[in-house]
Image (cartoon, rainbow, N blue to C red):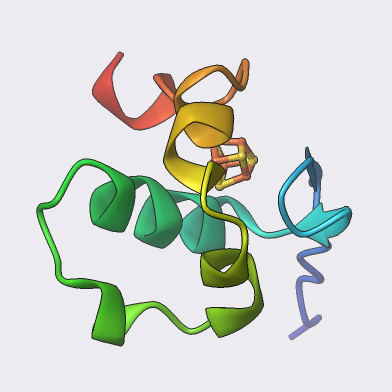
Amino acid sequence: MSKREYRPEIECPLMKELIYIHQCSMIVDVCEEIFIESTIPFSCILKDSNWKEKCRGCKYHELEYV
Ligand code: SF4
């Protein structure tokens, strides 16, 4: 049985690198206050006081709701 490889595929302007879609989904859920900030695994983005506005303006923000 061959292993299937999943690679990061979303260029995240907050992280400034490629991230996996489930990572994007987690950040969006915190942005929309479905989960609290302490659950976010990427605390570096919280240093930017405008991170939520940037995330909401990102073309991937609505992905999980379509
Ligand atoms: S929607 Fe937010 S978390 Fe997802 S790629 Fe864009 S900025 Fe990053």
